Amino acid sequence: MAACVDSTLFHPKLEDLKQSKKRKSSSTTIFIENDFFDKSKRWLQTAPVCEEKQHINLDKLTKQKIARNHWRLTAEGKVTSSDNKPTVPKRDIYKVLCEAHALSNCTSRKGQNRKIHQTILCRNLSRHN
Image 1 (tube, rainbow, N blue to C red):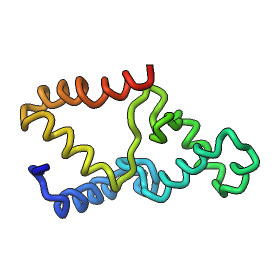
Image 2 (image 1 turned 180 degrees about the horizontal axis):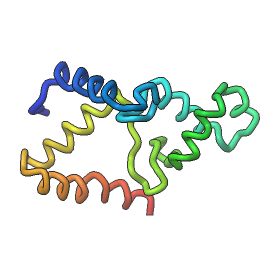
Image 3 (image 1 turned 30 degrees about the horizontal axis):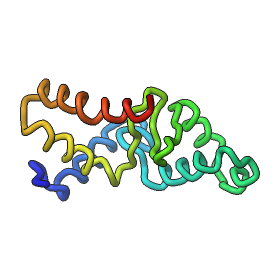
């Protein structure tokens, strides 16, 4: 997959954007920190088994963020929000954006948004209904 922007340029710009925000220490502002995502996913995976859930050491603030964002685990093991939108950690953002960009054939922003909605979001919604 050919990308219009090199990942070596993308990741520093993403970091710069996060640093420019008021809540730059947040693990979910701009992007989801990889460690935070992994811990949250493990915690969601053990949700049915309460005894195992207690062994995963999550602080109260992290549990509140998971509840506030309405994250849940799909049958395929993916983390989604309450409206079935995929939730991805920082390490996957570049790949997801490149896939979406490739699907749009480098069209305008409006065309790209429409194509993303038709292919990625609708495909995810149809799996859950």
